[in-house]
Length: 382
Image (cartoon, rainbow, N blue to C red; front, side, top):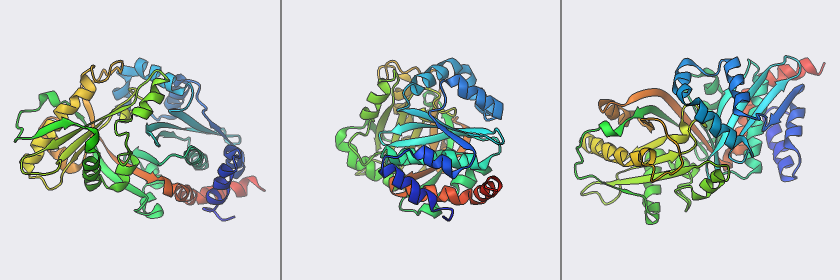
């Protein structure tokens, strides 16, 4: 069987027939043991991260003050693996290991993160295919990964996903990830009115998001569904003693018939992602606005979004010790935010692929690692 066909023909069939897809994947990778739900606790994974050098200085500075809270959140999320799970490989010959963490970011979507490896690409391939099989089995609608464009390994894996799957089912968006303190912003409203999302705003919100980020982003985030505020997902998180919510505000200007901007403020257990993606705020501004209008809308939207992070009446029991909002913004909006005192944490690429592209994504991963797979099979099938 040629590389690139295994995932499509074998894995999809095993899932449909309720067979053990992990056993099947293990047969594809000689000598590699794939373990899902492998980490028993935060400390298990954290020790591994330190050992393989995954946590660089900047990331350590970000999480170190909150390690006790992060440990508490991870251990609660890992208990039943419904909202957070890990996949690990261990190679019986080289003794190398690697890990991949995943958590539910929306009702029917997941985010993969914290990929580690000890220079063993076939093990990475095994983990990625296993994770994709989980998404298919659990009938998820989307998957995504955020990575630094400077990360060559991540670029190799995700950089050509859109070309492989096609623009109908995948996209890649580039953002500045900022630390923002809206309480320091000046008052220049320009008549901007901001109000919190209501159920009858769904259509206008979806159209605005599609225009600014594209249909794939809007669908992956579930903005074409009724549960905009992630009430269903929050119930699942609450059963683990945690919480996951989305707060939305819309901005209006005089002489504009439709909303000209929105913020999607995501709240979750601090540190599920070491860059704090679980608490990110997405800023979406109409690209047709004049610079001064744009600045005013950004200020008013982020002042409103502050409530989701710092007003405990909106999120009782959700501890948030940070004094800033982790914000994703386009380069255009980031330039304005820098004049308002925002600090750049890092630039990121967000790659998203929809359910219709899951099989093609698996094939893409096989092709990326095809030479390493062939070498391993030749070595171990002698």
